[in-house]
Length: 524
View (tube, rainbow, N blue to C red):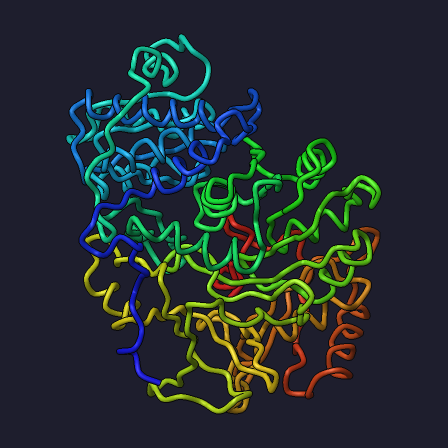
C-alpha cells in the first residue's frame, strides 16, 4: 500500500481549476428542486424555509462586503445553535470570507488567543457569552466590527438582525475555487493551545457524500437532531452539512444538551436521525429520560467523539429498539472516516472505513503490523484539511503526504473491524505488552455498581506502570474497600490478569472535554 495512490480531496465534477463554492453547493440545489417553501431549520425562535435561509445568507454576504471585509479574511463566530449560525457561516463562505466557529464555553483568555490567531475582522457572538467576549471588544488591532445575536436593542451593541435588515437579498457568489480555504475549526487543544484546522471548499460536500448519503441514506424526508453543537466538526456535519445536502430539516437546541432537554426535543419533534456522544446516551439511560418506543420515529442513532461502551449500546437498543452506529472522525478529517453500518453493528468496534477513505496501522517505526496488533491509525481521504494555520511543525507531524496521523491506537480484528484502544498517550504498557484502557473500562461498565469508568497508568511501589481505575458509582451504591476489591476481581475473571486494575478510586465525576471525551491526562 503506497501513499501516492491517494488524493487529499475529491475535486468537483467541474474540475480542479473551475469555480466551486460550498455555500452555493449546499443551498441552491434545494431551490431548483422546488424545496424553497420547505422548512430547513427549526430553532428556539421559529422555523425557516430554504428560501428564507438563502435570503439570510445573501444578506450576511452583502453585509460583509459593505463592511469592507475581503475574500480570505477571517471572521470569528461564537454562536449558540440557531439560524444565525447557518446565516453567518454560509454567508461568509458565499462571500469568500473564512468563518471560524468557536466553542461558546471558553474563557476570555481563549477568545483573546483565537482573535489574535485568526486576525478576525468581524466578531459575531450570542448574548449568552457576552461576559467572556466583552473584554475582547476594542482591544484587537484587526477587529473592526462586532455584532450580537440575540435581543435587539442591547445597549452598546449592534444587533445582527438589525444589521441584516437593510441588506439586499441577492448576492453574486465570490469566485472561490475547490482548494480555497472555506472555513477553520479549532482542534480541542488537549495537547496545548488549540490549532486552527483549515478546510477547503469541497470538504463539506465530501463528508455529505461519503457518510450522510452512503451510510445513513439521509433524504429530504428526514428530520435531524444533533446534540453535539455546530461549532464542533461532528455537530457541523450533523446539523448543517447533512440536512442541507439532502434537502432535509434540522432542529436545533440553543443551550447545552442535558438528558432532559435532549429527551424533550426527541419527544416533541420526533427526529428520524439522532446524533449524540456516549456520555449523553449513558446519561439518558441512567436518568430514564428516553421517550417510550411508541413515541419514537428514530430510524438511526449515531455516536462519535469517543468509543461507545458495549453496555451502553446494548441498553439503548433494548430500551428504544434502535441500534447506535458507533463511528470515528476528527477535526482534521472534518467528520467520519470510519463507521458501523445499519444492520452490521459490531459492538466494541468503530466499524470499517467509509468508501473513499483508506486506513493503515503502523508501529513506532512506521511499519505495517499484523492483524490483532495495536498500532497508530493513519487515514487518507477526500475531506482531509489543508493543514494547521501558521503551525508548520505540527502540520508536518500530522499531515504526512496524503496521510493524516490520527493519534488513535487501533487493532484490526479477523473480520476486518477496527477496535479502538485509546489515544496514543492513553495506552498503558504493562510488562512490555500494551493494555487498552477502553477494554478494561468496558469490562468495569458491565458491573451493575459502575456508572462510568476511566483507566490510566499509575506507578506501583517498584516504579512500574500498572492500570488504575477511576469509577463513578451508580446511584444508590456506596463506595467501600470491599467494593473496590470486588471490581478488581470482576475484571480479573474476564480479562488476562495483567490487565486488571491494581487500584480502584471512587470519584463523583470524571473530567471531560466539552465534547464529552474523558480527559485521562488529568486523571494521570
